[in-house]
Image 1 (tube, rainbow, N blue to C red):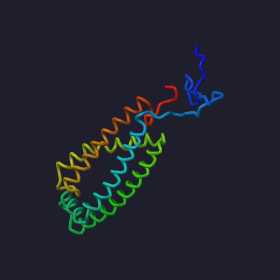
Image 2: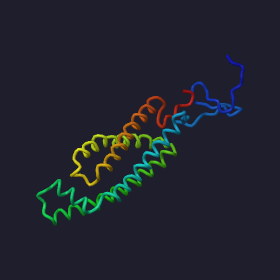
Image 3: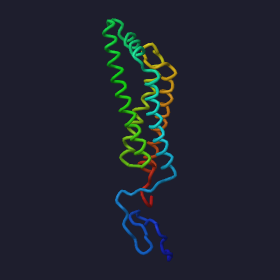
Image 4: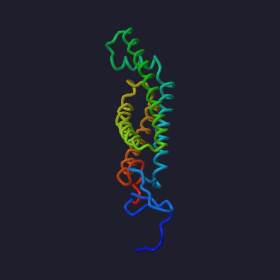
Length: 190
């Protein structure tokens, strides 16, 4: 048995108490300690969502126009009349912009929450990044049929790169959760 007195901030062997200099104080339930992975993981996830938010707004502003939407509707539905094509393109454009703005705001909010390290956000981020990784397949297919797309092949390729980054991030998030816990934060004393 050691005769040394504990150092201030030292965690008990069972991970439930911390030495405050005079006594063992109970730690808050569910408390976790950062690891060397915590900050880089949080910053990478935040950057990923911020870049995606900016890219989605930029790509929509640069490449999604009424003419591009009409071209896409015509290619997908060659039997539609001109008025139907214009109406469908207008609806697609309006819904597209609303969707892009809402999603961009959501991604920016998730970026901020990720930097704060909120545990529940880790799980939301993991699910959304996993869905983003599906873009590897979707963007690959879109590159195979550029005539039915509103975005040019170069923009689709950027989306493909972002999807590949999402796939890598999913793997990192899963490994971090398995190895340490959410946000790669370990239980005290572990």
